[in-house]
Image (cartoon, rainbow, N blue to C red; front, side, top):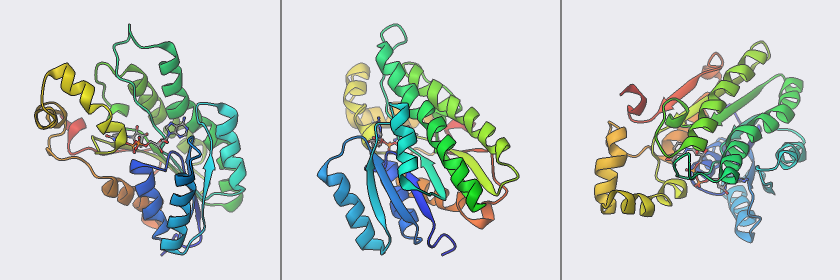
Length: 257
Ligand code: NAD
């Protein structure tokens, strides 16, 4: 329980990978700030459930990470965090010619600019505490590209670069900064894309998963949110003190292809 009593903010954590990371860290005795932009009663209930289940403090803070001032206010409102997991993400599948410019702006704002803003506010907190962990959830698409995903791929590559700069600027401060690059993981972000992909490829769901998605992922298995949260927990541990500035793949071999 080396993380007992530390505090983590996980952005975009009312669903999928973010909620799994929150659970994993809470299980280690870490106090949790959950975030999304929805502000539903269920969001506050998720925090209350987490608190009860793990006997830790858990709070929900609503902030729309498309807006710079809200990204900065989100971190400022916590007063102090030891661990920042930049996880919020969105997807819009389209060719470059048809991609609406506001969708491009949203993807860059949520998955790249927000990471810059939350990091800028969190770093002084971590420097004061002389310890910190920043984990940016990038993607296999932070290392390689796919057609129809210009905004997503650009943001995810950008966040790998930002991770390296942040790691260099904090290398002597007992703060580590890494990017995690998952392959396909069954969460709402992925499952929402399946109906339009089924139409595009004229395939059943099973055919699409076996022949299109798993063609990219040599293990032929989805990565699980549990596996990603296990990697995040490891990156927060003492054993990971010297891992900084890395982009760590967890993708069933996708980027080895
Ligand atoms: P998800 O859709 O389940 O969760 C996304 C979260 O981000 C939600 O809590 C949502 O409310 C939040 N969010 C979206 N827009 C926001 C905004 N404007 N402000 C604040 N919060 C916002 O998705 P997921 O699959 O769990 O994705 C988590 C991260 O993992 C994302 O960065 C995604 O790009 C990355 N990722 C996912 C996969 C995959 O296959 N699912 C693969 C690689 C990387």
